[in-house]
Length: 393
Image 1 (cartoon, rainbow, N blue to C red):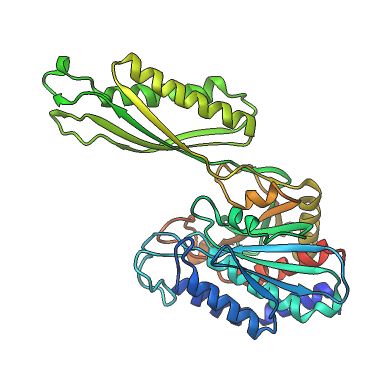
Image 2: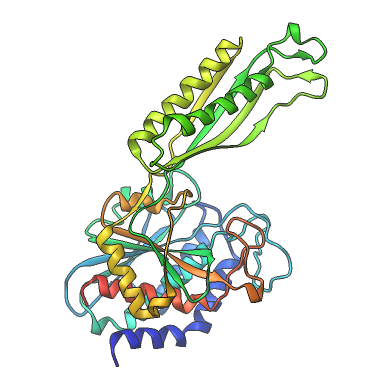
């Protein structure tokens, strides 16, 4: 039996086992950088598989090693472990037991897939050479991002390449998606406080209206994307929170605004953030008020290595069939896997989880999010297959 067939066979055989693992992790979600019980659970799962060479990184993270029959290249497989502050819908037998916390982004699936891949790789290690480094990472959902802390804690020292997998509700179960080159955006947070002089709404002549100033700022800032950005560079400027705590006849003293800027070019990213600050401050001043701008720099853009991503797509076609492997478009969401992609050849691909017949169609970061669990053996087996192929086997 070929190594590919061995991996596919074992992935199918452990379906029930990894489903139970996913249910346990899903029922016991923990927020970013608080994954203490998840860490213990994963460590015990690894020990039960006979994988004992492991160490803790970035406080709640784990690095474990599986070594093949001979020394060779080192490749890393990464999964994240943290959940989101979302209340899950009721009625699921495997629903969250922690009120207000839910695995709504599929990190339970990522950790489960990596544990499944670990089991398969450990059982087949006499068939391949090199070393697979397993990275169970905390805090992907919260800045500064667990990936940056794992890197600082030397979790990827000695690694030649890294592979990451993420669920995608737009892709049907049984399929996966790949993209070479630029894939995901940088993400910076923008906080603005527009100050004026509040007062009675019936006497605007005595006030400096921060609501009106805010409206002008929000409208004008869109010129930065539409008129200052190079049209070939994807850019998004969005504001999702505006608080003007006045009333129908009360103009407040200040307005608080929160938003995000995203792009795929570091030089333009820096220029745009300066323009945002300068324009907001200038508009407020010209209207008699002021604007305090605070920018929190987030994750960098994610670039999939051309060689590794092209190879991984070919290997996925070998494993699943060409009709099951799709090409992905650029996505303006952000992911802290981008930190790894800045350090070494990396590829970040998508695992299909959608099943319209079962009503599994919800997006990530929603209370209704779920997956078709037929994706679990695909996630586990494909990760194992990509690792051994990247090691040259």
